[in-house]
Image: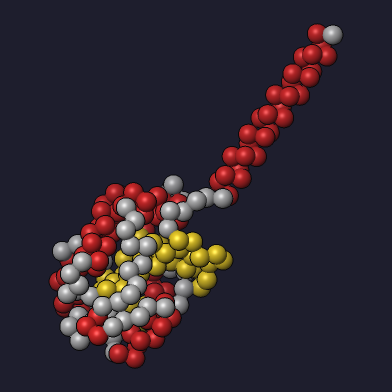
Length: 194
């Protein structure tokens, strides 16, 4: 009788261990992002514009990194500087992993935002941030591809940050108002460290 009880107890223990292992695996597969998930992820629309360095910048140049694309302008009084300040904090909190994340600001006011103006403005936040500008038609194509509406003077109805993973897939956006900790959580998941 005692032997039978021992075998039953061991069987139950084995079932519990297997169940816990399966539950842990399932939870790792269903990772919850704090941002807005695009499912299924799509190939990020291409971007080829003039960078704040004066050189041509392509989104594809950053394949292998997580890229944060934000649309804004240097004379924006509120959402743009607030968002850039949060992204600066997130990169600082990432430590060495910050090298795996690239922030791109696509101007919505090309008349004012020259490469030099973008470089000066962004350097106040993080020297690694890159501003992008270009001709009206080149920028209009990028706005259209990302669903961004730009009004006169550079104001935009899009205050989201578009997150492109290491494989060039757009599967996440970060709505305005997310905290640095929430963004950090999502980036660490994408970087494989969260």
